[in-house]
Image 1 (cartoon, rainbow, N blue to C red):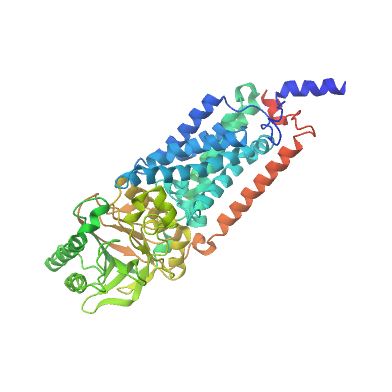
Image 2 (tube, rainbow, N blue to C red):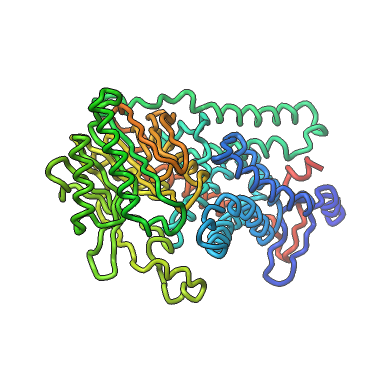
Length: 558
């Protein structure tokens, strides 16, 4: 009788799954969606996530993409979860990172996209591994989804060679109420909020609610209501408060443009410098004529002077001409030789009227880009692609946060991709920056890359309650309020000068104060979820390696 009762449970729950060979764990209890639908859902997940980012900007698509990936991998074996997650990653990163192949060929683009897709593969594996847990404890599904996405991004942001945070869910939320969560916990909390919404959506839709009666429909409606509530929760959070108390400064961004786009833009480095000098002198003429405001400081972009102006007298003289004309200090993006033989530095220099460079006010980029500004494992990398030999001199990393006093304004300078890294930006604010500046050079990319980078600036402004600006050689340049709104955005591949009065911030947001702790807490929860999932999985398996009893939720579904 006991054996007969046992068979009845097995047949009702439809969860009898034999181990697939020695050492292979059985599938999670219950059935996943058919493989064909799973593949389609994975591809759609990547594409839907893609359109949530600039230049498309459909922020509401991000949680839908999260839900689609979850549907694709739920209740699958872990290796299948990895494969489907990687497919979603390729669908996302191949088009998103296509700007990397504009001038360097397809191999770097394919390698970078494939590497990033593997991290989504690991996420798919983790989501598949937690299937039994969320089936048994249904309310945990949104929470588990959220912490696993944060864990995936934390790993991708740091590995290998310092990581590559492009495509974080948080960077898709420029126009979303969820962006305001950044003021409490930075980018990790925004990502968590987006993924939780996705988890709520899939929890609402997974069960066949039509056959579950009125109670089932009520539960589904509750999950949907929760998704809406989390999405609009940010509207209750004040933003911009920390950016309103310490005075103002009039700032001019000079976007000098380059003679031609591409990797050889710096073959005409003197012309690039001259473009920025000329545009600044033209601004000075407008100020003298009364048609433009006198700036307190002027910001030039990264690579505005690829001729070392400290060592090259002519380059230094031309920058001095511009500073003397505008009668304001200039933050100059420059490439400096040294300190060692065959080494260079990517730096922000403060150039003063009459006196020239201020040697005490200089920021050296702390996070050079691997395989773009320096080549790790050069001898091995050369065997993969000889394109690495384009990088003749390795950029040396700086060691100090980019806090500079320019025209009496303490600003936080970060250079190019550094804006994607949480601690690089936060360090400037905790060390006294009242204004955030991002110097960048997009001459080797396209407008999509520039807009994606500007979206990161928007998040940083909200996160730290600081007004910010991005100055690019070719665009997009612009100003960002402490509430994340963009003004004065320039066109792409064009010369432009924009001037705004900016508010300085002297207070600190919760996110600035707590730093890494929200991310650490969410990572601890992710580890706990994986451990709990392993325990649930182990308890579901009898000694002979065959699952013979399903979770109650699975039996109810069928």
